[in-house]
Length: 415
Image (cartoon, rainbow, N blue to C red; front, top):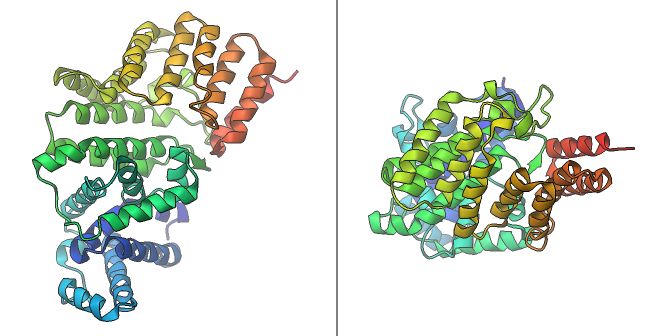
């Protein structure tokens, strides 16, 4: 019998693979996603008590297929739907899915291909960039609508409408890997989505755990798949390098009780040196492939952090120089916030505070701004201001580990 948390991790891993398999076989994206959700709920109820089946992906595909066929047949336009289902449904849909989808020894290639195809489908050129990102985070990343809304600083209802419109827009689109020209046009959205999925995995925006390892691993796996398609693309190599260099620190990010350990206090002997070496080599390769983009620059910053044997050995002037490049390449305010920290480390906390304060309007409501300001105020010798900022950040975050850490920092400044 597996623990509920282990079952949840397994379901999150298989969800996009199952959805990809259903969309490939039946072609109905929206009802297919509903059917997958029903199958996931059934598994969440049964598996913790009855045990995980030998081939969990095949079990989910079989259950979801049956739910989808039932849904198609009970639609108001029953006759039209049944004709479509008859044309699209394999003859054995009510018994056993094809061997490549159910046999335990079938290998991972079909599921990998389906997930990658699903990723490119969600980034269809008919969709606006914001819709591409939202739909992919939902279908491939498995994030909830609320989590996606928080990541984009919009109301949950707005995000739900955006995702629903995106599903309707791609209704009937072929479930095939795009050709080279079309693929290149979708690549920017694909990479941005993979970056957001990784970020949610590395630092969860809500919940009891700081790290959602299965999401981070899935983002890395999919980015490796994209790199196999485009081995000479510098942005793809840069993104994979950034993920590896960042994820290399995972083991040292939490203490024995799951508490957050900040970068400058981590035990660097616990960092994954193989991942650091691979990421650093990728950075060097990516920078040789052409003009540096945001992913390459961020990866270079991560490499400088990872190469420092101690926190005090970090090459902050070089990191600041890279942030100067990054803020010219991307309008993202989080890049400016990272630069504010680098400014503080090179020119002092007051200089960093001035940079952070300039981002107030763009980061209103984001707890990370208050957290950075709190740290810099503490370094500047303003304990009262730092404590207020720590408490403001703690009140704004939905992550319990982050909240506990921020409250702890505030408590140390009492009196």
